[in-house]
Amino acid sequence: MSEALRQARRIVVKVGSSLVTNEGRGVDAEAIGNWCRQMAALAHQGLEVVMVSSGAIAEGMKRLGWASRPTELSELQAAAAVGQMGLAQMYESQLSRHGMGSAQVLLTHADLADRERYLNARSTLLTLLGLKVIPVINENDTVVNDEIKFGDNDTLGALVANLIEADALIILTDQKGLYSADPRKNPDARFIDVAQAGDPALEEMAGGAGSRVGTGGMITKVLAAKRAAGSGASTVIAWGREPDVLLRLAAGEAIGTALVAGTAKMAARKQWILDHLQIHGAVRIDAGAVAKLTQEGASLLPIGVTTVDGDFQRGDVIAICDAEGREVARGLASYSSAEARLIARKPSSQIAGLLGYTHGTELVHRDNLVLR
Image (tube, rainbow, N blue to C red; front, side, top):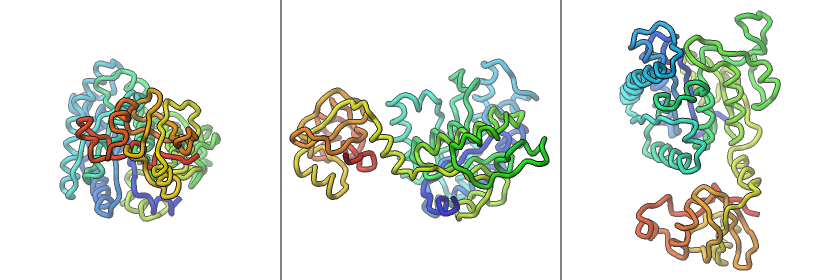
């Protein structure tokens, strides 16, 4: 796992409410400044870093003078709206001190369940990373009721790791990592250094919520690691106040609990594409495009497409066939069938002129393509 983190180029960092707000006493400028310093250092080393931060409701509670977490959804939403201002301002000021741009991105689980919104969120985040900006993500608790009732940012962190195909998810918490039992109640609890993400035994070990401020517990972290492993991302659960924890983890030091993904990132993604039994459409390509795909590992460009069959949307899995209709590959379409018909047989330089916009130069990118 230490070697996997040392080789990671894209990392999602998630911090919980108790850390961000110093157990509910309001945004902890020193702690956030410390994480921002480390994230900026990683970015300057060439890594891509995304922060998923809790704390908006807890900061709002502090600003509104509330001593305990309210139960009314409207009050929780009001606290989130108030607290989000301070949270975003703190990250922006601290990252800017270290020469990094920042962006606030508010998501809901619904955004990541809807295909179009999922792809739009992915494109936005990847564009921000390409611009050397660190996105700071939180759930949009101000407008979606069930996000407050049932959502947690451990799950959101895993979903974001899946979304951007991160190499690793680092969950910073107020505990050293995962134990075989609650160490606060059982002195015989054994610390778990490393385990396989998705191991059912981990869920049995994990307890309930451990903080009065947040909504998650160790069980949500274990389940988040299982979800992240689905796209090949390994997870580390570590104490957020460990000195230089992000820098040391990225350097390969063993800190906290490592929950290792069983499948490599690209292999996991391509297996998911290959396992799609329902194909939403197909394209036929010329001999030159077949050679590019099968011999050179290239992407499928619109100019190589001769015909478009079926009705598919951007993000659907489509079959890629040769002139005789034999399937040579399948992949995720970057354009809908209607768009593909307009740009087929055209050079990629004409896409923007034909459509008025572009989702990239490829009809199917090589990272989203599997040979049959």
